[in-house]
Length: 542
Image (cartoon, rainbow, N blue to C red):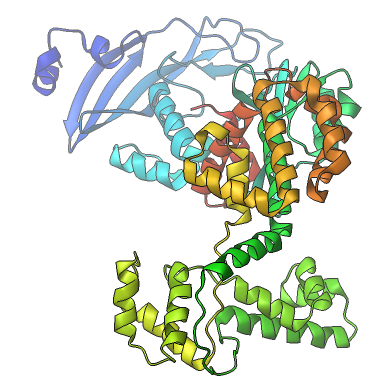
């Protein structure tokens, strides 16, 4: 056998074969055969007599021997199969129900497995990282024999500790966004997931806190269900509202304020534009008509469908189910005139590259009484910085002739852009952004007040000045716009947790990181996996 081994592995012929193939394992190699990229190793167990798996009594008598086949990790490009001869022992304890048992070689074999311990570890690692079909494809590339179902069976969820961690983070995540949600629990200090719950109800979270006592600090977002669960199951725990969610809620209130006062911004911008446009000789144009765009036609049809069902005395919920719409959309179409809906749909058309130059084109078109070349106007605005195509210019001139051209809209920033200028630190804004924000503040006093309050609250968050929170809430409730008043009212309802969040160093940042990791796992399984498999992959750290 030594000559055979020397020919197969000439570089390690000076060593014992057991030290090369099974280092530290109690086996003796009796033969090695190599055929068609498969290496078959004949081995015999030399371990001491094992113990009965039931009563743990050490065996003394051998019942029989038999040979079992184990798949081992590949060696180079060769697949390795170990034919291991093991012993079956008698259990001499009369009170034990087991009469015989088979020995297991530590480090090589396990009960009910046809792969070695090392190969099982490899497969478990691959299954943790890639799960079903992707893991099976990787195994084929690595010359490992394992299907997707076998790999999934290797995944077992680790046991959850009987006690909750001292600092517990809780947050929701979506199984299907807008429909079903779960809850993830994270040890904030250790940065690892503790458990995953199948829903986000207060009853489920309260039951978990009751079964796993010990949480002293609970970091959460503004969800009321988690607040109720903490008050019921862990009343002595200190609740800490997450600072990022506080800023997010505040930015939502600021954006609503900016959206409600867009008319102020548009009026000021139109007044400034009117003083800059030179007077031109008026010309007779066809009466303005709404362009037959897709969004306008959809608005017309939706208005007709909703009012037809309303005439049949259908309820809001029934219409929403029939037309697959949200109830708020149905209610808005019921309570709003068609002309107003069409105007809103027209304003939602996106600004293109031609938008900044429409005022100039309209003035030149009116001045020339419509007798102007599209190519000439294209060259004129191209010299002024236009980077679009000539066809877009010609299309706009044709719309002017037909009377379907949109009116020139004032160049005003969007509510989201204004909110980003307000919520960012002042030193990060460039000069142009500071100038635009100053124009917005001059145009609307309500946006100015919202800007001052938002920056004051952001200062409290960034410098952890929780002792000034009540004064901020009092000022916001006194003279702030309606969305800001609502945000201040919610802060007052959760005053203790918000104050702790603005005072203590704890936050839910590590929880949000794990939520992002869970999104990656969920999408990798394409929504076909069960909750148990998803929970196992989340709890199993890579």
